[in-house]
Each structure stands twice: as C-alpha cells, then as structure tokens.
Length: 87
Image (cartoon, rainbow, N blue to C red; front, side, top):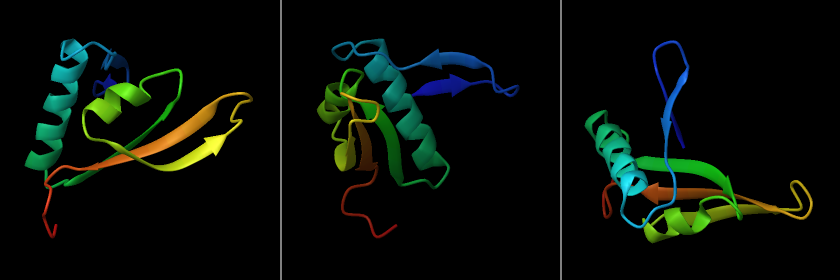
C-alpha cells in the first residue's frame, strides 16, 4: 500500500512491523475509508511481500494467482471495514 500526494507522488507506504508504523498507517487508511463511506477494502500483494502483515490485520485472500511471476504467487485480499454491516 502506498500513499500519494495530490500530484500522485509517493509520500508513504505500509511496511511490515509488529503493530509499528505500518499498522498505524493501515489503521489510519481504514479510518479514512470509513469516514468517506467506504466499507470494503481490497488490495494485492505477493507472498514475499506483506501477506502475513495483512492477515494479522484481518484481511482475507479471495484470489491467488500462482506463478505470477514464476515462482511467486500474487494474492488479492479484502477486508470488510464494518463487520456485520449491510453497507
């Protein structure tokens, strides 16, 4: 996940740390999404990147593509930001 400014320049990102800066940034992004009426989040990652980080934050894999690129697996993951919501 990366943060962009108004000119679409990268100004931040989420890194794997145990409830460190990455967790804090992800929580801030999720709170912002909810404040904007966005109740479902999805993103993509690869197994050597941050899949376990997102799993630790209740994201679930809904599609995996093996050998993209070989020998890696690409994961599409999602999270309902308001559990038990009809939104």
